Length: 284
Image (cartoon, rainbow, N blue to C red):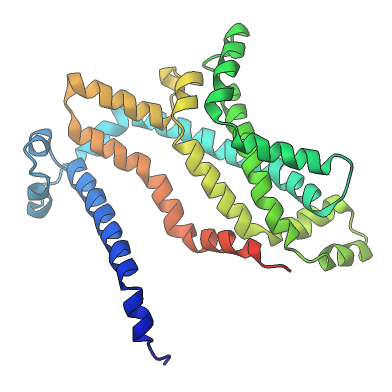
């Protein structure tokens, strides 16, 4: 067994304490929300959410109420549609673009690369409001297709720049061997190069999924109809309705339902996300 360097561990002790405190605080907040989602409104208002949790008096009907009465099912499926379609389309656009820009020299390569970097630095609010004015003039507001196109366009610059670093780290021997075997550049990309950057693809997809899933400002402007509302705007609608319904158990149940997809992604893909973040710095 490797001996423990106690001097080094003592020096790192303040960092361990800070990380432990942050994890404990986050876990406490999450457990409190779970307990509140299984309690009654009166218990929540009295601050007795832990009492029911430890006594076993759990109200799972809060989740059924949130899913049906509070329209969480509609918000959930809408955001799932936006996120899945947006992520898949973003990868299909960004991966070939990143590969070509990182592996081939052509006229306009550097200007295009610079334009992606500039696009990443422009705040979304500067683009969205003029686009909304244009969409209003064309009667395209409250349109699912337009909203999906917008979220794709806003995520493509980041995805291209992120993936370029990984394609640059791959050895050119793969392409040379493929060319000897008679592969076309397109076939080489899809059959060989694309699978080799799988960790990066998973990582950037998770980042894009979280960004689209948690989107509020753009969703509030472009898909404001009840049948097309995303989860961020939907949760705000539920919060506003608490003034009249007072169903706080259903509110916290809705929060847990909305939180589950991102939690599941991190739970099952955490190793691949870490590999995707670190692997791009190693040259092949």
